[in-house]
Length: 270
Ligand SMILES: [Fe+2]
Ligand SMILES: [Fe+2]
Image 1: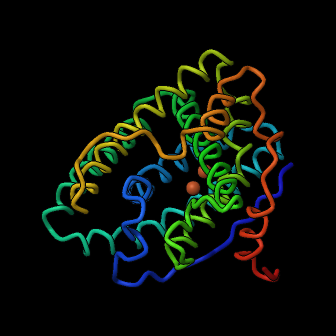
Image 2: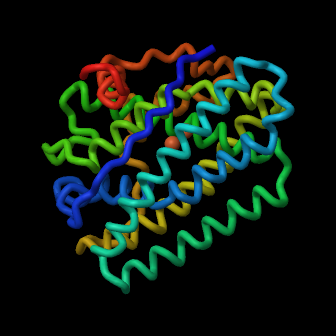
């Protein structure tokens, strides 16, 4: 149904935090770093969720999309893991230990969800997360296209910015898959709203804890912040995901996203 391409990309990250924490926008920078840290726990959980129900998908096109979705998510977290390791090393042992303790809890939560929760519960978590990241990614591209920062706020386009651009673009590219899976095997509209909200709150609580440690590590007060993209058009886009008629397939990605995807697709120029 949808055109989803698994792009095998391996970013090489220099051993320095200049691109990750340039110090221009501490809240935005620590939010993205916290988000990155959760990926090696979250994305394998999404993959386990898909694999657990793969043989019950009777729609062949959806089944093919789910396979590509798994392929993309597997590429994402492997790159995030490498940059996360570098960030941890650079932050030093004391901060790394604090962060790792939080990440171990998150990993344990997801292991428990996969083992104990129903497939529907795990699918609605996946849809809640994917609907949110699609809104986030589309907002980042809109902001970047309008010259209002986004991932390239530090003025460079190094491996860290490239990682996020590639990841965000593929999140938009596979935006229909978790929704399609939920429509196919889920439990209807009210459960989607409640389950998505619960998932997003669970995830955001971890982001918040990680972000406060990271803010402190950069010499800033360890205060709570809303996700930086959750304002203006981002908030509208996010709230739209809770409408009964929400259809991620009807969303129109901007040209910048297509340019980024072309950049990372072998055989195309960009
Ligand atoms: Fe991803
Ligand atoms: Fe995704």
